[in-house]
Length: 383
Image 1 (cartoon, rainbow, N blue to C red):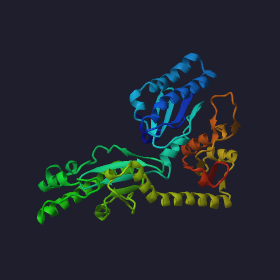
Image 2: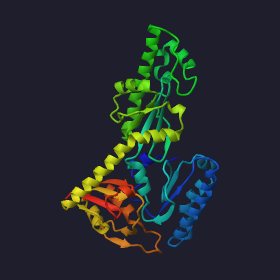
Image 3: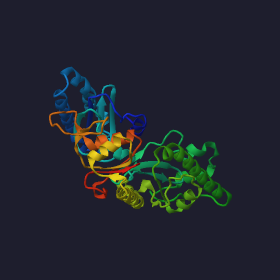
Image 4: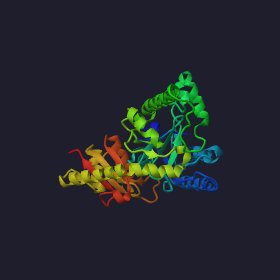
């Protein structure tokens, strides 16, 4: 399975040799809903085939479609779907990404990949991570306003107190581990007094410190996502007091993750993240409005396209669900209208987003109800 963040860093989403095939579809996590996912996928592949046959010889069309068809037969892949799927293919390149957010169906053959849904996943301000922590175990989750899923802890991140402390673990902590958590959400039962109980508490503190250091190094710094602690209330002060993670937010979720559902954990985490998310979008809208009043902002797609090619766009806001049929000339910035019979034409806003990134601009995919313009685009210029 491909890793979107790594591939983006390595430049996969930049200009590739055409034809570039992009397929998106909503998928389902559980049976029986996911039984229709493969059928819908095959229908979308047929749409790709029809587009390829309009422009490319049969042997090349078959070559480009081969990995898509193979993926359709991979039962293990289809048994582990999330909420959305993105599949990209071009000469020498094939990537499939399971996404924790639903996407609109799309099957397009063009000169470049259609990447706006992936950019939204990569940079959206609503993404966050949740650290589920008890005295004996650590888990990590990642999600957005729509979905939350557990992620594998990186090598080097202790999953249990035994992983962290090994031979240094106090003997009586083994007893605590055996009797603690009789019911989900319950704290550990301390069978000891005085010095031994203090040693057990010291073990928990050392475990928390080890988790904090490792999560910062292997997860928080690479992703730069907000981190929310989900733990029983008695652990909040201890962890926040010792943490050196600058991505850890002040508010926490008062629950043992093992004692609740993923949906409940997502709802609780989103209540923590949402005020910051909305404030960020409001800040971006205000920034654009101020820039436009000074002649340093624009919302006309043709005007913005030329500014992007000239390298004048510092930040580009793109409406998540808006499409402007057309194609951008990457040399001049001229925007051509769509030829419905040309399978190499995609969404002009998608092209602008990729061009802006390649020219060193910041691109933010914004929900429709938070977009400061009605054209689907808002650019802040450097000069």
